[in-house]
Length: 196
Image (cartoon, rainbow, N blue to C red; front, side, top):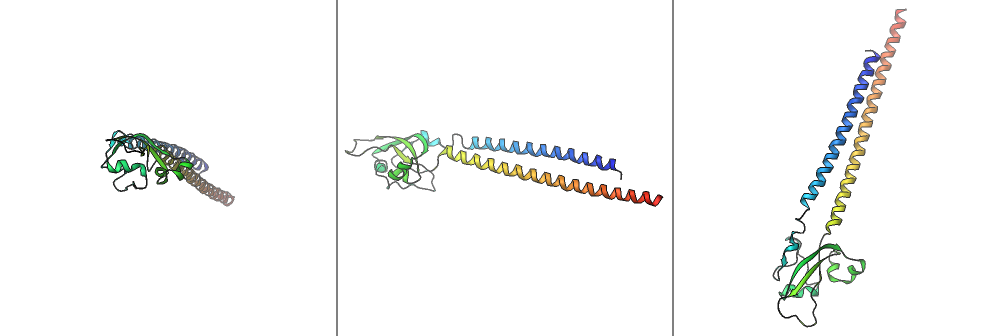
């Protein structure tokens, strides 16, 4: 084996590493785009599809069938629980202020609130107010921001890991080629001395 073959193999290897880097970057980029599209598809209108529905007096204000919210903690929901008023959702879930979280009943449960619009079914009770907000479990924009932050950090760590792996492989292969070239050089020098 001569040095031209070693140099040719080294340049071929460098070309394959360059192609592999581009291929890995392309795959990572496509996966990121696919994840963004999946989030948009799954979190589109399905999260707040209940916005158009009315809250009937017989239905409890729940986020899911598994988890029921404690309605007796709030005095404002008495009219909904007894069927004296009907409420419908108006706004999206939003975080409560720090002062509201400590003072208001609907903010104590999750720290988030959702605006509702209620009306009396019959004659209103004297001295009782209609509820303006109800507790809600998750704020959609904050959850989406947390998800994208997690995905970005994961992609960044994967990119750094792949870069280190490719660099390490390149360095080990280059060291192997150098050792091989040194051995070939040593054997050629030994042959020169033997011929004399």
